[in-house]
Image (cartoon, rainbow, N blue to C red):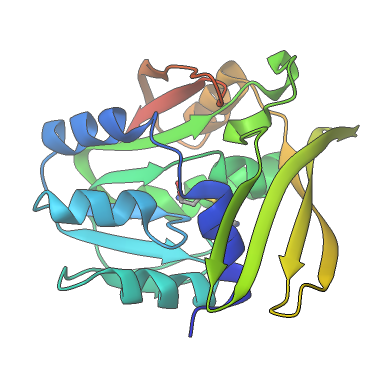
Length: 240
Ligand SMILES: C[S@@+](CC[C@H](N)C(=O)[O-])C[C@H]1O[C@@H](n2cnc3c(N)ncnc32)[C@H](O)[C@@H]1O
């Protein structure tokens, strides 16, 4: 049975497609094993594995990795349940990707530095570490961080799930995306939950400076275009 955390994750992250081309291009360029950090239920990891890449999916949330494995349908994907700020796979990867603002969930500069320290020895010589970040402060229309303004809904069994970003909040160094989540039980009774994801504000320049201080060489950035529903992102590319 699919967990609630996996249902909300699929509704809130699953329809994002604007970055697919970027990850496909990087995977083709840096051929070899790929580590997807913050893989969630496998939106990117499964897509790359289906193209024939050898992918390891890392996430802090076991329930999401269980959902990823359930969605793999014959694809072989290794999963690692670990905190990206302190992880050890015992392997090296030619490409480490951190899609969809995941690095902005780590909790500030010190946490990002811990991630860079953990990731460096797990990147093959000549490999690439690529991290997607959005400039949340430029998000004037409220569609923060790849969040759709429309409600995303599904029905599982006879239970209805619906989620919508309703407000942006700001606090010291972070933007909060507040969502209204609704669960409609078979008899029609409605449960409403509020959920806020706090996302670190960090610019491409800051992230590149932090990575350089951790010993990475900064390579040219790539860009993920904005769409009607999603703001664009910069992809910071780093070499070992
Ligand atoms: C915005 S979602 C992105 C999911 C997926 N990569 C995608 O692009 O659809 C962020 C993911 O990062 C994971 N995550 C957040 N903090 C993490 C940490 N410290 N270590 C590992 N994973 C983390 C969350 O559990 C979640 O699955």
